Image 1 (cartoon, one colour):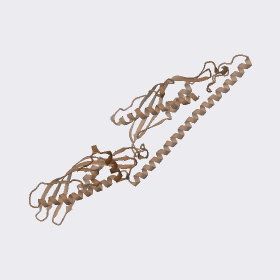
Image 2 (cartoon, helix red, strand yellow; image 1 turned 120 degrees about the vertical axis):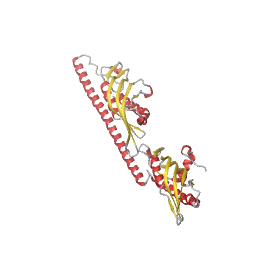
Image 3 (spheres, one colour; image 1 turned 180 degrees about the vertical axis):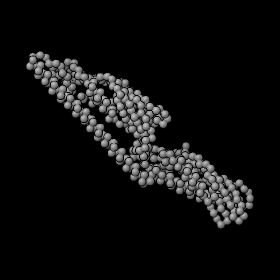
Image 4 (cartoon, helix red, strand yellow; image 1 turned 30 degrees about the vertical axis):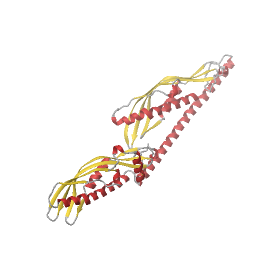
Length: 392
């Protein structure tokens, strides 16, 4: 008999089975439109259901009775998988048990064993093999054996097909799909709100920079006017318009430097704290900036503006991964250091060092997400900071 096992499921067979079932499925929130492959473990539920259904099998005729007395073992695995919005069932079980038969005419009782070696996803369209043995050679034992291997086995196959139907509905009924749609709409609204708040924060920072620049220009003009009345050269007051120096700096030709250290530290802090990084199944955030060392300045020479900066930043991070219902599965945090935020870093490949508070197998997925998506998200935030710093 040709079958597909758990470890040898071919792509063609998988596609064939998916097209045959055509059951809608809902993935986790991170799985946009339930498009990517996602696996949910249903082994425990499946084992309980199979044991419950098969142990209830009884066939009672006018002169004979056979019944399953015990399901001794259900070995195997089952999962419900999501791909392209469709549900794909994959399971394989080896089931062993015992049975008992009675011949009513002479009160003969016999016992035996039963074995279902291959209960798998093919069972929906193919007969499940049921092996039956009897531990007696008495007259009438053979009749009980035939009743068990024919009628009782047919009942077991019916129960298995019903089990498959219930497994299809598990985690994917109409109520589940509607709930999934509701959760996705809520998550989208939350993301849009976060984006709006982030945009407002950017605008606030830019407005603050404009106000500081306006105040600086007014102060520069006042000092220049006072110096002109006194007949002395004005004290150099810096300007940071693109490629323009102070009023005394004719044609912005001479070297002139304006400190940006304090405003740069604040801008870097605000940018990182406003950053939320999406990782598979959850998010990572910078929770606290613990220290920033370094300096920044805007320099003018020959009508050109050069922004120089060098910062060493230390911070704390937190992250969590949630299941499809929004429940937190893993939560941890740690320390972050960006030792070299500088203008000479090539291709914005800023070095990101991080540690994990509880480095255990349970937090491995979040550590891996931090190493990949988290590190890149922090680099993107620093790149955003640099772009805003150059506009000051």
